[in-house]
Every structure is written in structure tokens, then in C-alpha cells.
Image (cartoon, rainbow, N blue to C red; front, side, top):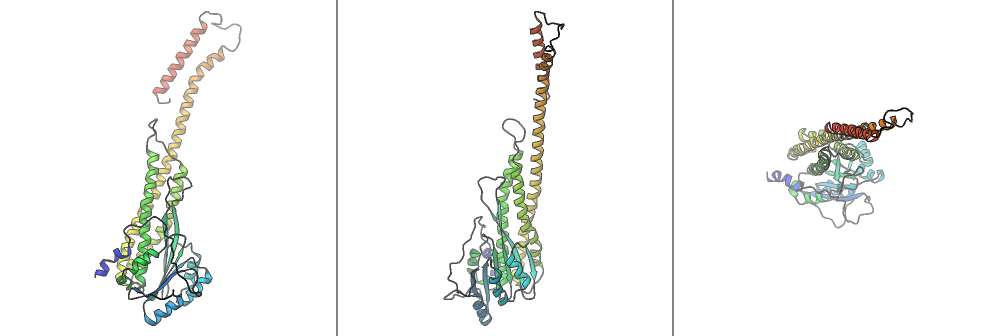
Length: 372
């Protein structure tokens, strides 16, 4: 079927941007519409039903029940009071509603009687000129999706992860949208995972930079230059934040791709497998990042220890050299009346010559053994 062949091209951008998209729809809302509603529209046969004024969730659902189709409502950080009316209108489960309002949930998929509740963590890469011990590498947000037979509700938390561009792109493909709410669920999952891929590629550059600094030789000597351990640790923390978004999503994607569900169109379910494959690839990358940073951090600490030992060897070597004239001067500074060579004409130059010769001999020996 041509629609299925073109599904990926319709829902996936050529390359996800690392910039924020925080724009919202500029609409004049009805007073009965909660201020958290970004957009509310009815789709019938894959086409958005245009209205003279923006619909409230109640009006949109009334149209769907009367004429068919499904409603897609986008919300941004709703309060409990704002979301309670919508939850009652669509019969959402109280536990899912509580999670959607409170946010800070781990990625998951929960099935209720007449709906699916999915939580996705969105990841945004923060551009920076130089990685420091305080650099923020990734920002996280959340997208929570309620999927029903005739409705699809998204609840966003965080300043990034806007779905406006995705909604416009889906509206340009009515054949895909005609598949119903499960097509939107797949598009959002694919969009989120594509964002993971872009962030993983960007983080690879930072990790390569740190690795190069740790293992590249210094200009003066042949010893590694090392880098600030704080930078490595900060990057490791950001990778851990990334891992918390990716790892818990593995199981939900497998369920959506392998287990038949009443609310997921069979034609759409096939393409959740592709999302699961890409997610598995990102998960492997993130795990590899974590292990690599562990090795880099251990190597950096080992280099710092080696550098300290090298400094101590140099200090010890010079102390051994200085000990010779110190001993000689100490002996002849005891002020005893009867001491050899005190009244000898050549005593001073001979003693000084012997002292210098011994010091030069020790210096040469230590340098030949790598202590200096």
C-alpha cells in the first residue's frame, strides 16, 4: 500500500534540529477553554476540520461523537483544576491524570479499559562553545499521550519539545491521519526517538573531545596532558540523565511493536518495530558512552597520580644532589679546633672540586635513569 510505504517519510524529518521549538499556536481561545490548551482540533478522514473560532475540548468531542473522526488536544503544563474537566470529558483514568499533572515520570506505557497512557522523555542538546565542569549538555522535558478510540491528548512539560511542527507535518498527509489516534502516537514516538539519535551524535563529539585531551601527548614531554576531572564527571552526569530517558522506554516500544492492541491499528503497529530498533541503537550508544567515560575518568585520575609521582621523583633527585654540599658544609661548619685540611693551602678548592664532581655524577646517574 502506498500510504504504508510513505509512512516513514511522512512522520520523520530529514534530520531533527537541536534547537528549541517553543512556539505555540496564536489563537483567541474561548473563555471556557483552559489556558493550558495549545491546540484543539477535530480530524475526519485524515483532514482537519476548520472552524470559525477555536474549539473547546467539549465542543470538539461533541462533534466527534456526532459526526465521527477523532479529536487531538495539545496541552502544556496543565494544572489539576485545568485538566480535571478534560479528564472527566474523555473518561481518563485518575492515576494517569495524576501522573500527567505532576510530571517527572519515568517513560512507560500503561493500558486502561478504553485508553493507552504513554510517557516519553524529550531530550534537547544544549549548544556550548566549550565544555566546562558546569556545562549543561542536555535538557529534558516530558510528553504524555492519552490514546483512545476517538481522541488523542498530549500533555507537555518543559520549555522544549513542542509538537507544533509535527502536527503540521501530519496534517499534510491526510492518508496517514485517517488511520486514527494510533498514527499520531507512532509519529510522536518516532519524533522523540529521532531526537535521541541527534542528541547522541552531538554528545559523541563532546566525548571524543574529552578523550582526545586525556590521551593526547603534551607539547613538552611525552606524557599525556590530561584534563579536568570535573568536566568528565559533568559529562558523565549528563549521559546518565540521557540514559534515564532511553532505558525505561525500551519495554514500552517492544510492547507497542510486538503485542496486538485494540487501540493500535495493525498497519501502524508494524512501524513501531522500526522505532524500537532505533531506540535500541541509541540505548547501546548511551551505555557505551557511560562505560567509555568511566574509562576516561579512571585514566585521567591515573595520569594525575603518575604526574604527582613524577614530581616527587624530581624533588627527591634534587634533594639527593643538594645533600652532598649540605653534608660537606655541615662538616666544616662544626668549628672544631683540630680538623684536617683547615690550614691546608689547597683545602678549599679541593673540597669544592670533589663536591661538584660528586653532584655532577649523581645528576648524570639520575638523569640517565629517568629521574630528572
